[in-house]
Length: 304
Length: 314
Image (cartoon, rainbow over all chains, first blue to last red; front, top):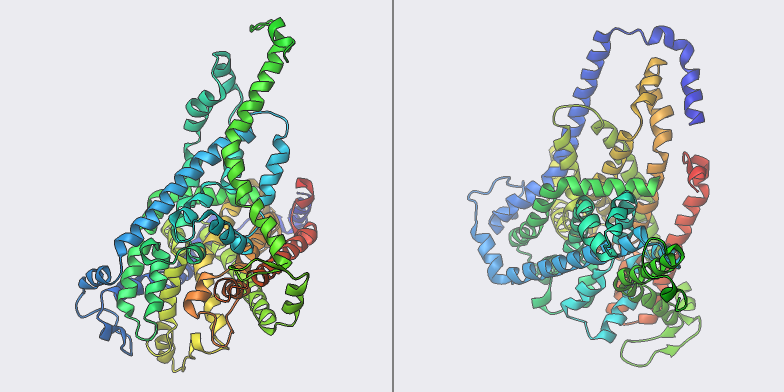
């Protein structure tokens, strides 16, 4: 704070006249600034969007149209049949349902375990609590890439290799989610539950009838984050899943692209890419508010 | 407990007995709420950590019994030129991709932090790549970088530049992957910067305006200092993330050409799951962890020199 206010004070002598620019002038420069910003942002926005657009366009082209130079922007005819053809070549519905099974069960599990754990850390006072919480914080610092091999060994001991259990069960618990829930629940006033306690409510009643309804926004954030994480995950399924019928979408997509490395049917690969990207984009656009809030709170919590 | 419980039946008068009863109830409830979560977190983090420590001192091909080999894994590593090459690749990727992304995201956030028509749509557009599957994004970009039919070389040909063979030229492959990764990751950093910018009290900026500070001075002396905690947060988490990047390397180049784009994580993956050198792969993972830890600790140790308010919070 100190540095900033002295800087501001240093600027003062010049200010007497400098601040007197006419409102017209500042308004004009603001507009010019906006126009410049708009131009730059549009240019960047095009770079952001072109890959998506290209993916969609390619998914409707014939293979000949894909292999042309200069690239042909629009297909002569939109071949919706590409999507049917992908359906014939790979079990898209299975990939889809595997991805959904994993992402939905892990999300439900995380919501339950994290909210219970968060409640315990935030709202119940008991010996050992803070020590255990520190333990949680420290497990958050272990990167996945570091423990992927031991985790694989563990799954092998449990007999879960090539089974969706390996994708779901380790995902049911989240130190990060517990931390997020705890932080949110800490902010709920204590008085709310004291009344309930006098009425003889136990902790589970307080958790389910008072705290959880208040946690809807953070639960939504956690749900979207977890769902997206599992939907997009590639490395872990790649390690533990090998049979085709158990593959998730990213795995199926990668396999489809690599299986035919020399003569890749790029138009079909793109169609499968569209199928795998579409649901997550829809979820993002619907749940945008919560997702953005989650990033902002987690980011600023870490920063503050 | 046994003595006090019958002596003080329930009721508001029984303050001391009530306290212990309540304390016991809290203890039971506290652990009951936590147990499923605690068991899970412990099972899937402590067990792997213990296994990591065990495996670093063993040679194991996954089917036979592990053989104790002391520090042999690390001796092997020291003489393994591919280990050094891939570790170098990880550093190259991390230390180019992250600063570029953070710099661009910061300017993007500044551009987006204004009241302007369409600004919300821009925020969503810049964020879309972040929610896209990395595998799908990598596939799209692999085609965009494709030398003969790709969009980039077509655009370059328009200005009479003969584009390189991006993904199959060892000079360009890593740069291509960095471009793709930043396309994908920039929205996330932008969003956090934006949140930071919007958290700056408007009074401070107004005061600076009254004092005659122009846009640049406001940026230099108000916004940047107040955003240093956010920059610090993004830098630390992005470094940790970049050290573990995997998907785009596997999909776009599969580590090639000639290991030019094999990061350490991909090399660990191959050693573990293609060559079944579980002990060796785990030892390299331990080194990866130490690198991440060292860089994070270094960032923390220099943070108080440049991060605003860093001491106050600690």
